[in-house]
Image (tube, rainbow, N blue to C red; front, top):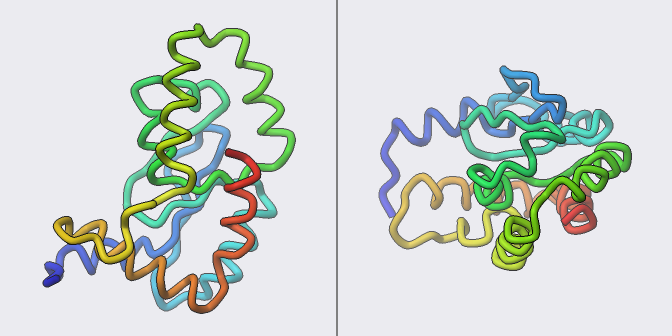
Length: 154
């Protein structure tokens, strides 16, 4: 698939993004030429979520359960949270109505990990390039801990 240079430039500028889970924007990101492994390790130590796209997500224990954004979070963010943040999310569950909770469970079932269809995406050049980044990071085993934590937290 031919990927427009504008997409390549945008997604290489924000090769990996660490999303602060306390609702702080702008999020921290690195260029492709930087040390992605060290950046990912730092994001994990801080308990930040991780994304491979160029969107500034607003994420906090309150925003996480927002029904308008939950699907985007599940599709585009690795949940590399520290146990304390996960506990804060669980504490908010009694405030979530049953209908919304059923929807959240359905979405989590549909997205057992971030970017499930990005690798070799047939029609969307943006997702296709994210798939290329995923493949590159996976080939270098840089996402092993990110994926492990994401799976645990989902």
